[in-house]
Length: 82
Image 1 (cartoon, rainbow, N blue to C red):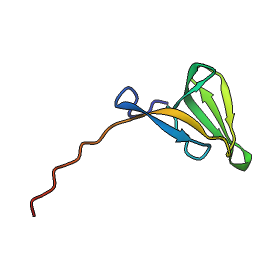
Image 2: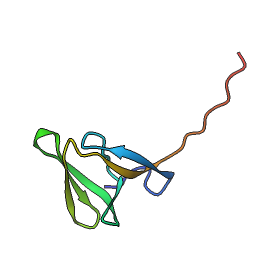
Image 3: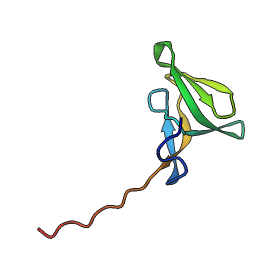
């Protein structure tokens, strides 16, 4: 499954937990970067993360991590004169 913004935008650092993690987020674990390919909900609010490399990781609800997330910056419009 491909995200609509894959390959576009800029990478920003975000704080994630089991409730806010998203497909495409990049985690650094042990100096190696893993990109989330798929997720599954587990009992008690946990998430099973599947990475593009095939490894998996269980993210518990109380675990807080830093991740890189690709976002597309939006240009603001100039205020209208009226």
